[in-house]
Image (cartoon, rainbow, N blue to C red; front, side, top):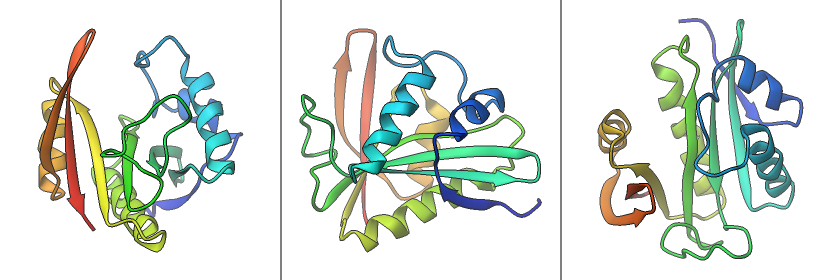
Length: 161
């Protein structure tokens, strides 16, 4: 595996994340990936979240978002409350990414969370994402809530850091 560099996401990463296959498929709502990332980057500038990207010689190979406080209109203090609970969101890697990229992104997100005095991290996954659920458990996250949505069931996991 070549050297992976982690850094904060920038506006010019949006087309590279999409073109590189880090973000593919449909989003969970009607917004496109480009629209969602633009909103997320604005929230990063406002201190509500951090976006980390992983890059190697071939380009961007992964991304994770760490949500400290949800935007107005979305209230779930068990998942992210702006103080001691933050949520891991949009952990994605390109198909060509080495297996360790997800772990490196998650590990760095945990370090950054601790620096912001976060004591609990949460992770939300679709119940049909068996690979993601298995990985979350391997990383030490424990299931604490199931929530129905119109088209799917979500499982929430948490971990004390």
